[in-house]
Image 1 (cartoon, rainbow, N blue to C red):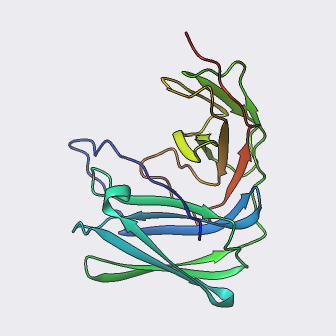
Image 2 (image 1 turned 60 degrees about the horizontal axis):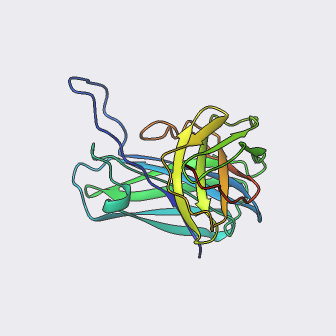
Length: 225
């Protein structure tokens, strides 16, 4: 099964700040509208006091839906000790109903139950590549999507099938700079509209988390001076 994941690094907690304890498990699932059809997306935020090498999260739902996700410390843990991960895929379509997301953290079994409406699907953003992409800079913009609060932007090398750079923003445009692209390779920008604010660290977890993918046309880059 092909799985798409996103992890990020948090700079840390502000010194001297105090607030009510955050839940050890925050999680949501929802629809994903991709290039090949509609599947599922998820968002997980975990706050273990102990720091294991990995954590497993189980998802169950109507129609026998069952899925296990393993978060690795090296990929998902941030300097503050919070773990988080986004994921999406077209091979697991959802049906409407109640889904349960559960895990064991610090020896305690935790779960959240979510009522999911599978008819709630975001529209893909219309992506426009900026003029004259170079080996150092690529600019992109997109139209706003109804129901979206933020966007994940990824620059992908289609020749090598690798993600070169990424960012999470609330605006409708972004410029990748300080790049070292290859003029012989083909690139594409992916923009994922998200139904919650994923630009924060960790992202905000809604009652239902929906994603939709829009893509630029494939392109090559000019050698920058």
